[in-house]
Image (cartoon, rainbow, N blue to C red; front, side, top):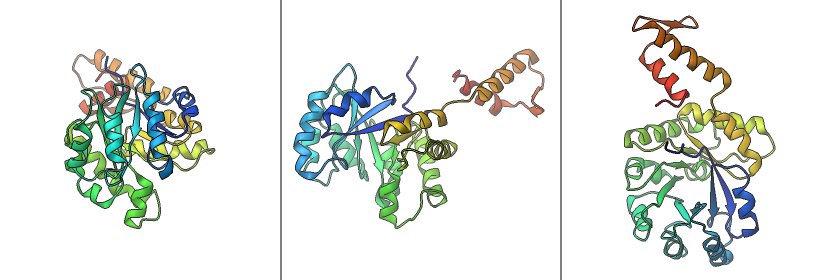
Length: 268
């Protein structure tokens, strides 16, 4: 059975190698070793070396490289993209297919790319980014996106953009996108609410900046016991109906309802 795509991606600073194992053990679905925002310019080469030293083909991690417009990008890609211990490259400020191609030019056969859409130009080129080779899903960099567009707020202010990212991903046939970080760390209810909002919009996962956020994100992206019980009732009723019209909990069951029940139970 194919593994489910990650619900959570946990960032760990690339210049803090003592935290790498803690991050791997924290319970995230995927770990991102970060060379970009978490690392000061003077520490970029050392952080790259630390990530390279920790790259493990048995437990491949993701790495967020520096942007293609920075002096560190070429060295990041040359050192890391071909290493089997790197599952994929998280590409910040992604705006063009050419940026993705620059990563793939030196990539090993299994490496995939997660472009982060966090600028107006990146959003305008969604279709091209979604259809670029080896792009598995899009990441929405909500914080930088707000700054670039002068938006103040992460709620209804970003509804249009979240919907469009989900739509473009679906049309391209790639995985459901990954929502941006929550800046809250200690308020589990708020983190879960933000993650559930993303899920309602059609996102399939969320970036995390601290292990404390993982449990709330996983709850948000899990089916509840009530969901599972409902799906079981639907499929049982359909099986017993022998093709006749059927209702469950007072509501008619048609094909979309059956497909949702199958999805909840992992049958499609």
